[in-house]
Image: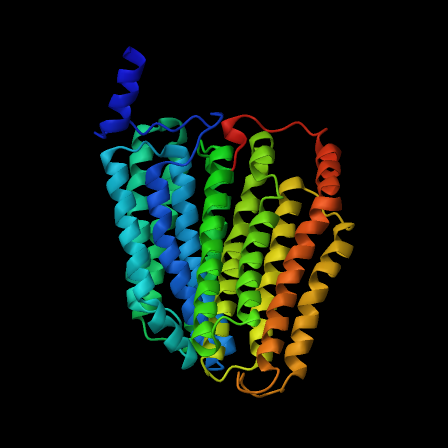
Length: 444
């Protein structure tokens, strides 16, 4: 009874608690309801960025759209990654931690409101950065500064590490604000954005090597990254529903509509299946030192998965007479799916410290249907927008989407038949190296 009372008091009473760091060796640690709530705002951000990408691609602004999209995905994902890393080390679920998390959620929404302006500016040859986005980003990051200050005060063993994060985040916010306020040529501003972003990623590496590491939990982080991946895959399912809804309004429930609906869901399921063929939690709990490169690879992965949703959204625009060619749809689907598959292979390689060339035949077989989809798109009424009134146009669209889905299925089947052996072999080959178990050996 006493144990239950203590647990209930901890669960139901959220007064200020010490922030001395979590146990990095705790097994079975799971995501909290607060973290799940926090992640929900990223559904909105990823969906907004994906929709803006599709709209700009439909207008033919490919380069500017991709640039603005990369900037948006990086800003959102980097803020999420930093908070998730802090929460894994110091999340104590008290009232101050909860309020700081909710404020950051507000920042995500504010940044999302700035995305249309960002894409519009990029389309006109201007910097994708704008004051509204910066304000949202600052709101997302300033609570992290306050949390790191609190950790520095209450966890003396990791004080220097915590203070280094305070300095890094503070300087970065000032620089982001200057890029939005100081009128500079577009090229100079874009270069500054790239340099600041790279500096934000490199500075923690340098500071961590000098000042030590935070007590983060490898298994908890693996679950957090996996959950955000699932949330991002949800954007693919939402875009599939939208595309099929637009098609059925135009044509009714035809066999092609059923094929497109099925293919979109198959793509989402296959990406999910492929991602969880990478044994992140099992490996990171035994080799936590491998988490550093593993986490950075996810920044691009979140963007590529959401871009599949953008491709399906572009399909919606196309069937509604938006002036999009079949080749445009094929590229918008095949390229992000191919990128996603390659990035998952990269994550596998970083995690297992192995670059297995025997994966290449499977990768080529997986990419073959995607290449065929692009060829079909290029040969079907080249240069002309999709017109469902034209004979065979709906069938060609269905074939393109079906081929892209087939590529995703080939990847899953191939790994289930032979790919898992590569994982077992890679793990056995590296098993002789002793794992790093001390918290001080863990990247922050």
